[in-house]
Length: 100
View: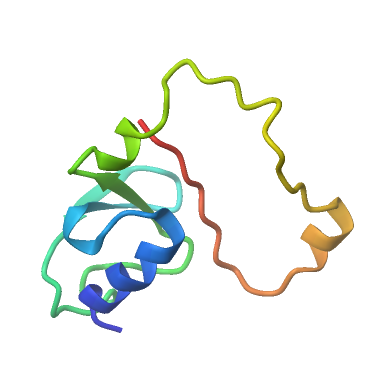
């Protein structure tokens, strides 16, 4: 898969437009490897391997400006997946999403 296609797929996951993303590749143990650039290259050509970590940064800061920094989310309705359903899920994609 071309890197540009990957970023477009990430839009739905992270809520950041592809053109506003800066992606960094980290090794499975969390060590920074490189910034990912070149929309026509494949993930393999960029050195992405199993269990790699990709950090997505919002260079536009549009998303972070929408979230109050002191907001209390404890009263927000949300879904928590039961442990047995989490353990039974298929696939190995893990996404950790946070806003800095």
